[in-house]
Image 1: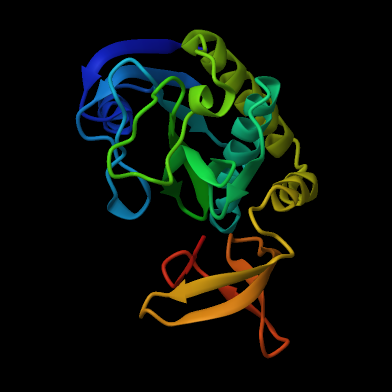
Image 2: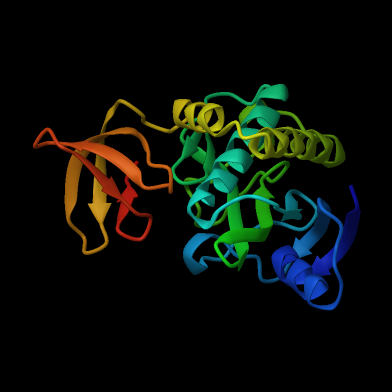
Length: 243
């Protein structure tokens, strides 16, 4: 594993994309930055992190036989891997909030951004970016954000945390490459926030409704048992789960 450590950078994902444009990086090339000036989250949001307090990381992963319709398995792999790593450090009340936010005690401590490269009908590679809040104690205007430190009351060695996260990511990608799709999906679904509990959802046009999360489809659509006793599927752009 090749790990590139940087101080200030606009975005670790952007850095990796620039690197790919001029060379062919080794599988599992990792970029770690102490500070990001333009960190990105899902759907164009900004990822805020104080310098030196957290892990802002991107991982380059190459694929051989992963089809386009299986791309959500990358999200499932990374979500489960980070969950497992945080369990090692005894972070309490961990869940995966669909599609891939990691929560502790209903507060977000990790966000994931995956950017795929496609060739024909297959996925050629992915840049997997994640921001894990480790030792940050204050989050301005982010009432739902937290960190490992806030949840446990102790400071963590970031390098130790990173090593564990990368170990788990490698382990679960090996499982994916070995074709263990059903096991990965089952494990991911078992970690879903508010699974099998009555929850409130909001559609993209502002309509709220009640339902129960039952799982996800193969391509990452959320399966919700709605009030009219029908299981409906929703994509990320059409629905959000309210706390």
